[in-house]
Amino acid sequence: MSRIDFIGCPIDCLDITQTVNQIESHLIRKKTCQHVAVNVSKFIEMRKNIKLHSIITKCDIINADGMPVVWASRILGKPLPERIAGIDLFQKLIKLCANKGYRPFFFGAREAVVKKVVEKYNKLFPELEIAGYRNGYFAERQEEDIANMISDSRPDILFVAFSSPMKEEFLKKWMPVMKVAFCMGVGGTFDVIAGRTKRAPLWMQNSGLEWFYRLCQEPRRLWKRYALTNFKFILIVMKEYLKMKRESLHNSK
Image (cartoon, rainbow, N blue to C red; front, side, top):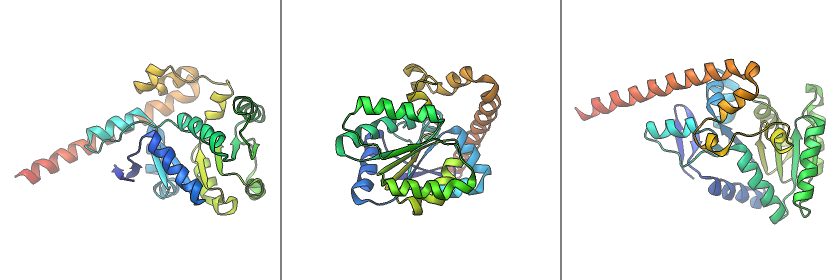
């Protein structure tokens, strides 16, 4: 498995099929694995959050979840094969669980939402054995009890559906207790699966405009985040590109 250094952030050069294969190898060996998906927002956040940066750089599998990251990798001469959206990987892993007998645990979102996710997959895949589920609302003092509860349910895969950096920090802290072979943060995936929010049309996903679709759905909450992070990301990529060109010219002399 090859890994590039994307302006200080390691990212694995994997397509979605290769990613699933890597995950299954961890499941077969029962070797603990933390997955993370890096998009523009997380890339900017980890540059100012030292703790998050440390967690991400030490994850076992790091995917690029965002076309701007993929495009930038190509501009900088370190091309990533494709964008791997968290929700797409999640759905492939659910099918893997149903086909191979792995047991997922769903952790996050509102109670009604996570219940609907469980109900939906019980109907879609009657053979799927779900280890358990829990909503994503809890106090810090409850974390240890939750980690022990997840451990007792003996899942093979843990999907954590709450925001960053909370999910990365929770997994890093409690994976040794939970002892789950594969742990993955899935953000707002449960809301999409439950039908609470809609995903962008495929053409917008492929054009790198999924962020704009989300912005239209929640403009008050997201406009500042996207305006600032996208601008910062463009500046960082441009600076790195110019640095790369200067070094290339210097080396050619």
